[in-house]
Amino acid sequence: MSIELLTRPTREPLRPGPAQLREVRKALEDRFDEERLLVNADRRQAYAQDWSSAGRHMPDLVVKAESTADVQAVLAAATEHQVPVTPRGLGTGKAGGALPIYGGIVLSMERMNRIEGIEVADMQVTAGPGTVTGDLMRAVEEQGLFYPPDPNSFDICSIGGNVACNAGGPRALKYGTTKNYVRALQVVLPTGKLVQLGQRTAKSSTGYRVADLIVGSEGTLGIITQVTMRLIPRPDAVETALVSFANAVRASEALTAVIAAGIVPRTLELLDHHALDAVRAKTPGRFPDDAGAVIILETDGRTAKQAFEDLERAADVCTAHGALDVLLAQDEAQRKRIWEPRRVLSVTLRETAPRKISEDIVVPRSQIPTMLAAVSRIGEQRRVRVAAYGHAGDGNLHVNVLFDDSSTERADAAVRDVICETVRLGGTISGEHGIGLLKRDFLPLEQSEDLMGVQRALKATLDPHHILNPGKVLPPGVSAP
Ligand SMILES: Cc1cc2nc3c(=O)[nH]c(=O)nc-3n(C[C@H](O)[C@H](O)[C@H](O)COP(=O)(O)OP(=O)(O)OC[C@H]3O[C@@H](n4cnc5c(N)ncnc54)[C@H](O)[C@@H]3O)c2cc1C
Image 1: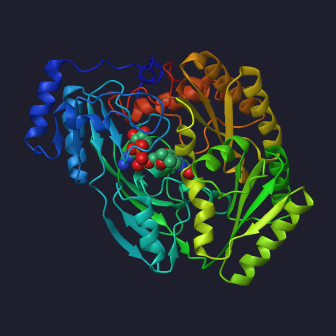
Image 2 (image 1 turned 120 degrees about the vertical axis):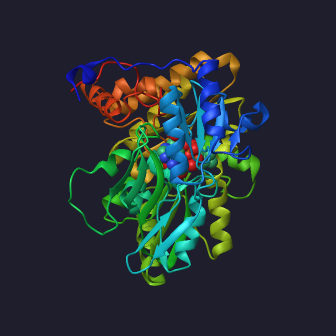
Image 3 (image 1 turned 180 degrees about the vertical axis):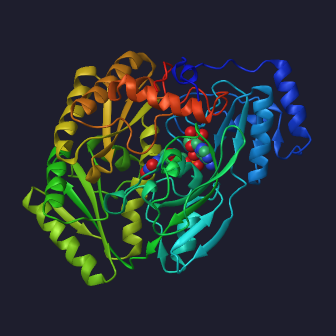
C-alpha cells in the first residue's frame, strides 16, 4: 500500500451510467435467473428503503444471493464495471446503512438463511447471514443453549445484519452485545477474495483480530456470508417486574443505584412519560396510569431461587430510591404483556407523529439522570416532543424526536443538541444501530480527524475501488497513515 493511496482524499463515487449498468446486468444474467436478479422497478421497490427516516433510494438491480460463490460473482462483476454494491440483510436498520444511495446493486442476503449446525459440546452455532435472529435464538434454546443478544427486532432482522451493526438489545446489560458472541466469520472482501476470520475455538490469540474489524463495519469493509456465534448455557429461571416512578430522572437514579449495589439484572429498560403515553393510547391497561416513568426489571439464573432473590434485591433498591410500585409478573402470559409494548415501542411512537428521528445515544451510566434532564430541557427549548426510552441500564437511550413538517428546523436543532450533550457527557452517538447514512455527518463531533483518517485508510486498503456500500459511516475527507 503506497503512502499516496493512504493519504488520498476519499472519493465519493458517481452513480453508474447506463452503459455500466447494461454490462453488469449482462454479466449477472449468466448466473442469476429472474427470481434472483430483480430488474423491474416494481420488484426493486421493496429494497429502496429500510426502517430509518433516510427516505427512498432505488437500486438499479437487486440480486438475491444463495451462496458465498454468488456473493463473489456479484463483487467480481461490480468491480469489473465499477458499480456500487450495497449489502442488505432484512432491512430493519435504523441508520440507513442498507440504502443504495448511489444506485447500483443491492445484494440481499435474505435467502442465505440456513442454520448450518449447532455444536452443543463446543457451545456454538453456525448459520447463514440471512438467518432470522429469533429463529437462531429459538433453535439453540431447544438444545439447552442460549444466544443472549436480543435486539427488539429479533423476529424481523438477520444475524448477519446484527454482526454488521454490532446489535445490542435489552439483555446487553448482563450479557453484552453481538461482538461478545462472534467466534468466526466467513467474509467476501470487496475485491471478491474470500477470507475466514476468527476461530471456531473458545480462545485464539493468533494474528490481528480482523473479525472484530468487520463487526460493526455496516457492510462497508466486507460481506459476511457465514457466522459462527458463541453460546452459553440457557438460564432456565426468569423473573420480570414492572417498576413505576414519578418521572424518568427518578427512575434513572434508581437504576444507577441497582448497579452500584452490585446487582446485574438482565434488563433495566426505561420508558419515559412520552413513551408511556404512546403505549397507553395504543394498548390501554398495560402500564400503570399514575406512572411518569417505568423500568422493566428482569433477572435470570439457573434456579428460580437465584432469579427471584436478585429481583427482590433490585426491587428493594428501587423502592428505597422512590419507586411508586413494583408489579411482579406471575407467569409467562404476564411477562409477555409487559414486554410486548416495549418490543414495538419504536413503531408505536412512529404512529404518534408525522415524522420521527431516532437517536441511539449512550452515556456513562452515571450520567443517565443528567442526560434525561437534558433531553427534557431540549424538548422544551426547541418546542418539539422528545421521547426517551431504551436500555438505560447500560446507558443506552433511544431519544426520539417527534414532529411534523412545520417544525423540521426545530427538530433538527433538537437532534443536534442531543448529540452535542451526549458527547459533552463523555458518551457515544450510537450504541447499537450504527452510523450508516443518518449519523455520518455527526461523526466528527465524537471522533478526531486522525481517527477518521485511520478508518478511511482501512477502507481504502480493503476496498480500493470504493464499490462496497459507498457513502456510509465515514464522512468524506482525507485518509491518514
Ligand atoms: C422495531 C425495531 C426494533 C429494533 N430494536 C433494536 C435493538 O433493540 N437493538 C439493535 O441493535 N437494533 C435494533 N433495531 C435495528 C435493527 O434491527 C438492527 O440494526 C439489525 O441489526 C439490522 O439487521 P438487518 O438484517 O435488518 O440489517 P439491514 O437493515 O439489512 O442492514 C443493516 C446494515 O448491515 C449491513 N449488512 C446487512 N447484512 C450484511 C451482511 N451479511 N454482510 C455485511 N453487511 C451486512 C447493511 O449493509 C447495513 O449497513 C431495531 C429495528 C426495528 C425496526
